[in-house]
Length: 261
Image (cartoon, rainbow, N blue to C red; front, top):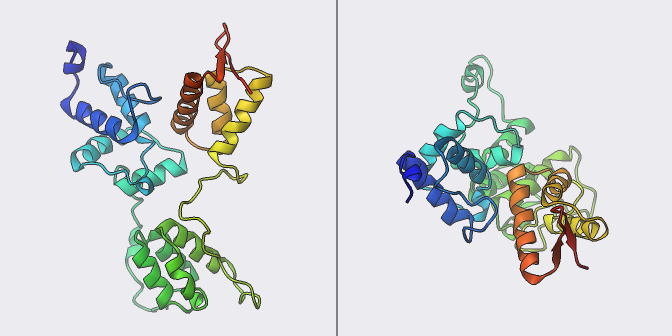
């Protein structure tokens, strides 16, 4: 390890090493953290990489790394809702505290949980077993209960249950509420319904007609997919590197890339 790296706080080096092993296949991957960076640059690289964490993908961190990331993100404002949700699930960013009024029930009147309360219960449930218990305990899901075992992840079941609540009237005869997913794995899509793969293919097709730099491709991916910049850089970087190895990408003298269709 270089003299520069030794000057960094040991905790930063440990969390950088853990993120590299968890998120990247090798040191050439886009976003891989260089532990020989100056301290402030190292912190920025760790924050950028941490934004790729996703519990839904099986990512897990040690308590020590979570504590270090909590300190780093305490000085950063995360605006991307998807990244914010994932970091909150890890405990890196604390959930918003409920107001005192929300925590203290009114003594004068006790109300049965209404639909809004039920929606909150569903959104706050972390395990699929908790969501199933909610469905079994509430008549809103009476016709939906037979579908419960078809859902393999908490996110899929949560989305389906929220869709059931959106319909205020009884479902039309013969109409099945919130059908179970046909595939075991959930495809991530943009608001337009296109997956990252669809969007990347469209960008490459466009580059075949009009070469563009990798930075331009990243911007297009971010605009069309509505994800974070770090996520877009990672996705585009992986694809470009792979296509270069196959000889399917030509790099112009000005740095522009052209896909060889």
